Image (spheres, rainbow, N blue to C red):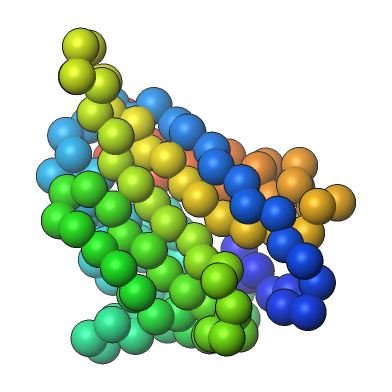
Length: 134
């Protein structure tokens, strides 16, 4: 899942919500730790403080953890997006009536790549659900 793009192009913000059958605490560990993310997001993830290296099939990308709140969300920014407002975020939302847990992913993509980006996240989240047995 390498996400390389030109940052000079105006990007479109997208949000995608997925129902995840697990506890917010388990989900947070899967979206915020290198071990958890290596089970679904990348082949290998290395973290040192707020710097993350993601490895996919010989492709590497670096990101900075720019914000987080335990059991609620994590927000990363790709190295190549450093001087922009672009980021990707994993947010945990718990429905107050049903206690259903959802993962809301916020990302940016070129307008003509929205469908492909959503399909990419669909595959990644399918891997996440498989990893947690949901």
